[in-house]
Image (tube, rainbow, N blue to C red; front, side, top):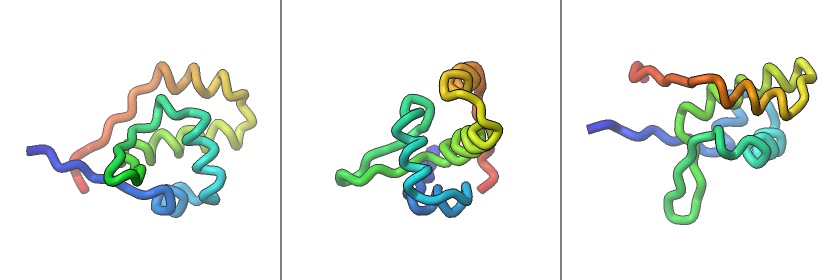
Length: 84
């Protein structure tokens, strides 16, 4: 049985080291690339979201346009290892 690990928006902002409002903006902008789950009307994010948001952070800091980041996300595979 596979265990599903989830993290909050606050947790993501701490791990990625960006303000919560920035993470929320990225989640809204790149929604289809960020895995999430809703439990009792609260949205949580799968651990793969960490790598996706780190990716977005890197290329946002490099001043790439949103469309270029989206194209790169569409052609990138994020794999989570089970070593947690």
